[in-house]
Length: 192
Length: 362
Image (tube, rainbow over all chains, first blue to last red; front, top):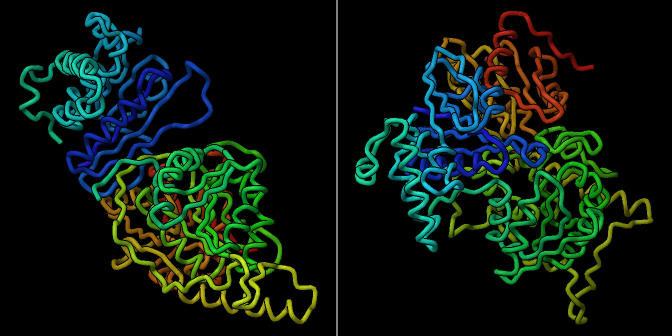
């Protein structure tokens, strides 16, 4: 079983961080993982994306041209990668920054208004965590409890940030129809 | 030690420290800046020294000096920077000094671009600098293997008193993968004390002079004969490669190294599910090149396909191995573009169905 995905957005939206957290969570679940950033020359406000592979077997190609899942944090990302996603895959669209419908009909389109949800939580900078939670809920590539553990570990020295980030993470997860946020810490989700 | 998720560049830096290297001299260039960045923080923690030199020329000659003093030392750079270091690499080989040089290749020629490439193959494997010499060249395909090969590179450099390249493409430097460092690592070759090193003379032994200048023709020829004997030993004892699906039947044998071999492996797995049999031989040591293994593995195949991020540099060594016994095909990307598994699989189909044109040895 292999999950491969492209996480894409504006520089500063947290695409690379989201990808890293997915890779870490996968590794903590005992999976083989790779995280490959696009590191080409980019201007500020330009696009940033990374490719993450989470697999039961050693990762073959870390380069994925036709991913099984896409997280499009903004419109240019959807424009660039929509046609490349494998039929039967998943595209998660951040509708806060994407003002068009996805045109693919041969795969699952999931929507989350990541920036709006984060704003409503009073934590605009938490949009990346909302998107991460929604992506985990939409794809099941890793268990939400692993991501939660990772957030607790990453911000161990700043308890206030742990709570703010987890709230955003769970809100994103719930927004796409994931299990109730109250239960997720104890109940592994996902089908990987 | 538990697995850690690290960038290839960071893992290379940590592997060098764990191999006992306490001196790094370098000059920044993308896409390997995470190596000096990591070591600028890490070297002081272990009592080592990190120096950002004024140029690659300076850094490579600092390597020469430190190696001459018997220290484990390394530098890293990317293609244009490695070109600037070629004089020192030739001097290292001439003076028989051990040093490790990491090249995280970017697309050329000239300043080129910062994206991945494998277009320094010929520079690394055929000398690069002037004179009759070869550096050992090791090419990792994963972050774990990058760490492992860096450790081995220090042992091989010390054992043969010769420069050793670790040749990675931009991908292996930039991607993150789990890596594990072995706590109790033994040298892979028996290493003697460096009695030849120039560490200060107390009249208790002949002077240790580090030099590559031999003005007398016969003396220099004898030196060259000795060097060639050493390179012959390296060609006999240090060949490294791995095969994938070589045990079964296959129609096409793919030759690829570094991360490109992983792209090809994914392509081969997908092809085999469709009933198309292909296999891979992955050179790990590019010098010495696995000529013999390639020749043997090619016997089962009707054609050989070389895949590289270059205009076809390793193709030359594949031709040398095969001596015209099998048709050789080539798939390459340049400019920093990558080969995708789909492209590699399509090329195999082209080869099998007669749509690919054979690359002939001029």
